[in-house]
Length: 287
Image (cartoon, rainbow, N blue to C red; front, side, top):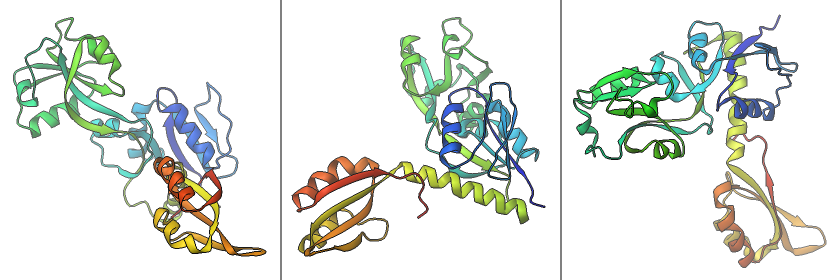
């Protein structure tokens, strides 16, 4: 009998929607409702546990779930020894130390002797200790940005995406303690049937993450321009080249290009003689 494994995923917050989108793009078929905490996946031996993002690491560490998706900042805060199988390239943010605009503090060393409010007290205290900065860490859940205005603290350490919230509250960043994003985690050294299922799920999810950063480019080109075009788009290993029917002077070229490079690559390909250029999204990719 095939074993069903569990994956703990966020049930709310900034990681929920992109996580659900990732799972569905990976081909998992499931129906989620607002109240359902446990959702079976119809086409894979997998059960999704929709829980608080803060609880994902605990459930994986305790063996309730074999896999979990959470933020790297939350994993660091728990201090749990879990394996980061893959970075998922969404939910990016920074754990940032900041002070009021009027503060004389300009470097991390200037935090010595200050009261620092944060929702990440363990990560913050460990970072200051590593840097040899004797600051007092104050654990605060929610509304961390207003702590200096309320004279609860002299500075803060908080998650920052765009930085707009800090600006609104009259704060300026001084140092970054941690770069965070969504990650896929599991226990270390999972073996046997469960290990095989964990590896299968990791492969499917990472194939989506890899594909999002790539584009599939197709074109026709003169055969004598092949060397020049290959230098522009080398592909995963090398571009695929197929002779065109009824025209021995031309070839069809297929290649994979970094999504960020497409805007620069297309004009070069056109200048090299390529025509009929098509740029297509890739849904999954295993290199």
